[in-house]
Image (cartoon, rainbow, N blue to C red):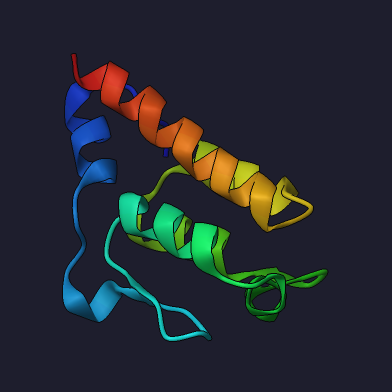
Length: 101
């Protein structure tokens, strides 16, 4: 789903319920894009690779399934490493925050 309105941006930036949280291999739990950015920033490349393989991208799938943000999902799918994923999430958060103004 595309983010077109302030309401869409607010929904994507909101916390999700506990049953839809992302549980990382390293124990980090994310309930929002802000928390996902922090988890990605502090995890090892090995932990990142546990969730991202040539056949799947758990982070992109979570963003799609929980927040419905197709752009960020596609961006995460194209990331070659953890640092790119962190940048993608942080850039998207910044864009969404601007959309709220």
